[in-house]
Image: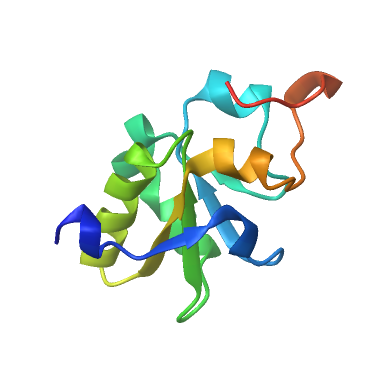
Length: 114
């Protein structure tokens, strides 16, 4: 599968109740993330993929996000190869923020995309 064939969705189109998987590293997550997202850094993904499997319902779509879309595209492609319904969030958290989607940060600081 080439990235051109990878299913993508605009940040503004991710449903509020959708399962958002954030694959950014810990410092990026702490700076700002979507509330309720599941955080598994790409560097830990294979070891921790069971955490995603536990959260996903039958046939549930997984929306994969990183900062701009490169890492999340790789993880989404991996999930599709595992038989999951996964889509890449086009433009990542930068697009999420630009679309005015809500974000929170660790420690009560104002959220931003690192």
